[in-house]
Amino acid sequence: MYRLYSKLSSVLAAGLLVCNSVTAAYAAGAQYCERTDYSAQYITDAVKNSSLHDELKTTSCSLGGLGRFESGGNKGVYNGSCCTGIFQLNNTNIKNYAGMSRSEFGCQSLQFQVDTWAKLTNDGYNSAPVKQLIQMGTFDGQKVDGSFIAACIQLGTGNCQQMVRSGRCSGFSDINGTTICDMAKNARSMADASCQEGDMAACLGPGDFNTGGDTKLASAAPGPTGNDINVASGQV
Image (cartoon, rainbow, N blue to C red; front, side, top):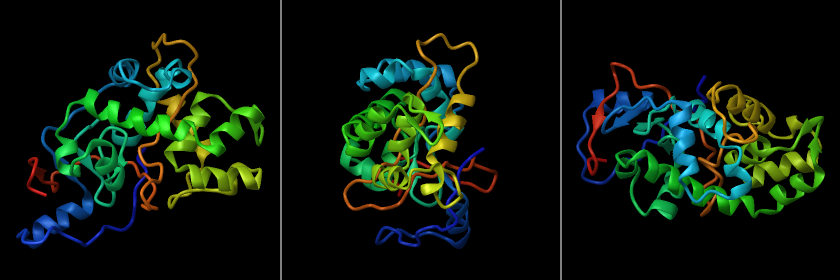
């Protein structure tokens, strides 16, 4: 099940000629380069090969589930609102951590995308709300494990802090009503059932933890449909 944003930014690059049908396609999401269907295990393997913090890497099974939850395993998908790639990084994070446009990012390899996401996640891991949750051990009746920590980063450490201050999972939810606790459960449930990687705990990484003043949250991309368009690198 994908998390969706209901609004699409209407700002297009200056000088780009786009017909009405193409604009409509972007409202539903777009596909950059080839469509992929990476399994949770395949994504887990890429996580293992990344620079992700060791405490989260030991729970990489459910991080594979995160990739499936966020993008359906499709590294080239743009959700029509803010976010692109296997872990649905927003435009600001793509620029800050990968140094490129979303269309270029969507055409990069799975490992490149995971490596970029790992850098973002590592920065979030050092944030105040994450440290506080780790010290707490449990939150609103749930164990604070790798899944919970990664979900905190995924939805934004500022939003996570809001939840922590409230003392309840319901202290913050995204535009679709998804809480950090919900996200952790979803990532675990979508991990490869045969995955043997250490403690199966970690969850969604920070496809969209807020940086650079960008306050948009990550949203899972809709799977491309027949009305979607294929966009090559550099065309958007």
